[in-house]
Length: 451
Image (cartoon, rainbow, N blue to C red; front, side, top):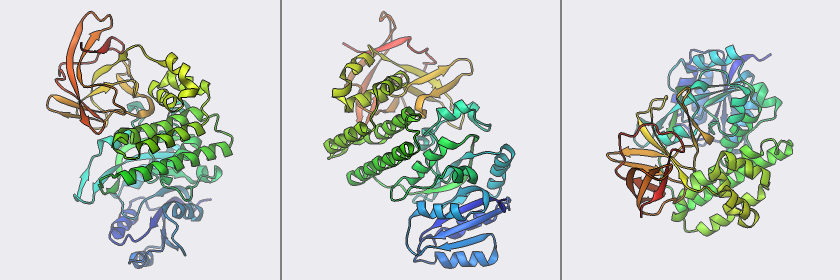
């Protein structure tokens, strides 16, 4: 039987600046039945002395000293194997819990519901500005329906979110038996090991709950992206997906999860890299690597057809990179005109009113019964309202500059006109957006270029 309810694993490398705040936030939790496993990864600052000082005062803290530097993923693996708790959570040495009741509130839900996984929210702390910030884009990448919060998920809901859960290892509490029984550990030698681990976890959880309250303080540093690190990130994303595909094949479950896995791969490429491709000098090389990677997935036609039914744009991207193989299918998938949707939307999390502009990039479903918004793949365009303009973060340049008009379905009546110009960096700016627009049913109007 486990000796404690919760093992808290902290990988540490040269963290003396933040370590005391991290340890205080952990050891002062009102939930006391914990062990704290600190894996010191050959720090050459005063981190070890700080750990030893805390260990003398609190017997719940255990120090493991590595003989060589291993990195955060393998440090967490060491912590998992050494842990005695029924459940496991991770916290980085430069982060902290926001208040002393965090673990008590979370563990009450975990223990009462015998959960395999609970996912909770965080608040970002900008180290440069020395203030808490809200990153709307990151927050919306993993958006769950309002009725999926604070209750057990059904099997269908778990299946819907395969590979969609937050990629961060730290904002979760895991059942140790679920990890050990399914041999789930952090991969070695790749970046984004958090994302790989999280996706592995999503495949084997049977009892999941989402808590959208903020419990975790996450330090961030804002840095300007350059061409070189964009390419490095691309290589890391490719390596991450190859690692995951090998994991699925090794366990003979690659066919079962082929469609959600392909969607994940294409989504990560088109969401992060394609908007920047015009700004990258090695764009041709990048496209060739994408094509090679897509080809390595061996996407059968039946899989592509199923993806096309659910998300045309993802399927269209696959066809783009395998033109010779799927040219006829592309014609079959082609839409005759662009269906659009405007709707006025108040997010249930905490955000003010915003207009969402839906394109085939991301299908948006509006359910009148519960008046909730469902985003296929949990992805939405990144929008920013400013005066009478709306800024649309677009995957690819779908429009040319100039005037456009929205017509009724039979093209007899113009609903309104607007102009489009390119804002640079994948941003399209819509001018003169009518603020009186409410909800318009899907497929009731069409868009065409003004003559």
